[in-house]
Length: 275
Ligand SMILES: [Zn+2]
Image (cartoon, rainbow, N blue to C red; front, side, top):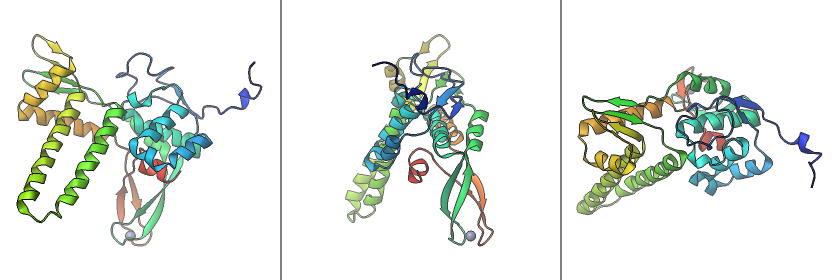
């Protein structure tokens, strides 16, 4: 088969974006092309069908497939850093539906339901102004962090959701001893999840004379380090997560003039809910 005469009518890139991670945390070859100018295509009809498949949504499968379809420079989106996910989905949303996105939210004061238009190019611009802070320095140690890959952050998100559900169910247990047992189990699971997240978020730990990069050593150290250092790492991870969330928008209720901040997230709810 020769070159398809219809090729020039294939979808074309609609916008080009700079990956916020600048590709710094990626193994060679994961991103093909210039990380400062990655072409983003609009979604195909198939992608839109996927967007409406609830099972694929929950597992993160939709997010991965859509990124791979609309950003062909990325062949394995499970390995994309979580700090690149929201910006990529924002760009795909712009490439498919344009710069404006409507959000439905209830007014926190009078309860009136409103639809707000959000300018997504502003969100993309915001991501250009922030930096991933990767250093935690103590008297004796210098710890270098890295963003989680989507596969891990998505799995942790699912696990966290499950734990929260079980917290809610726990309240219904009438026997106090039984409830206490379930509760301490849940706390253990949260602590374990935290340790896993922290150890996967650490690229290296440097002492005065050695730099440790082996994951197994780092994991063991996390399980045995001082609470003070553990908390410092947690704070830094928390700060980064907060900074790298989609910026919130200030809106005003037309019924009661009440102003509030509207949060959104492109991964899962807002991107997929309104497609
Ligand atoms: Zn109101």
